[in-house]
Image (cartoon, rainbow, N blue to C red; front, top):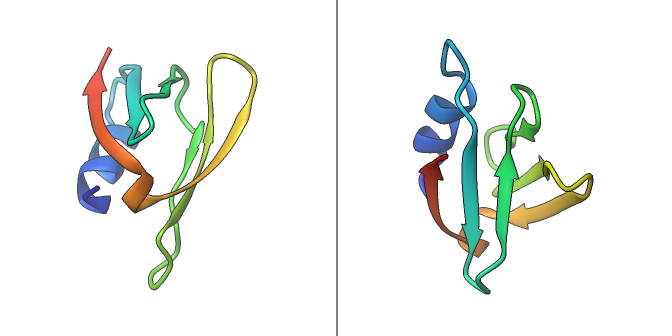
Length: 69
């Protein structure tokens, strides 16, 4: 996954919900601004806080696609 695309979606103004799909087929709805924590330079993981109330810790390689909901 391209970190720049995630940064763009995460900072939309106004914010629009989006869905992360993992390579395993799990869909994670990010429905609030600030519910996706992006990595500092040199790291490849993200923290996603889904609308389902769960926290997900993923590497960028685990994200197959991202779509605006």
